[in-house]
Image 1 (tube, one colour):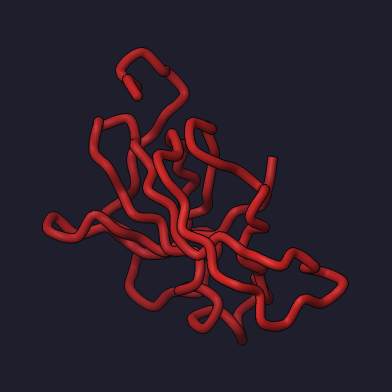
Image 2 (cartoon, rainbow, N blue to C red):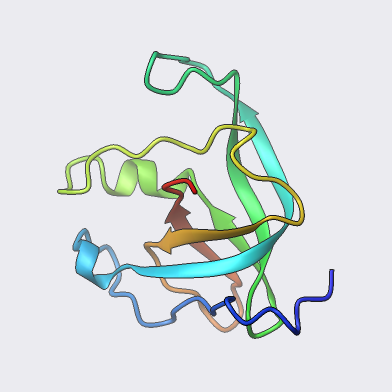
Length: 122
């Protein structure tokens, strides 16, 4: 996918404080989904009934780089935080080629193009 001409894309932050649970430190990141990795939902409950959930996604951002968005990491980090529990996205929430916005909860590093995030939906 060529994403050079898409104005609404953004770049992940490298300045989110480590192990924070303050929602004011989180940033929204918009990118083009290049691939998704799904996992089986071992506990399909009424509030998240999908049989498969998106655990990770590869997303191309405004800087032209590919980032791995890890949706499962935040589940344990923020269980006792004010944001409460956030479910993994359903397998049909988004797919390859979709432009999505996620809420980034951990910083990226120069040599590690991944970050934890959650997806609120469209």
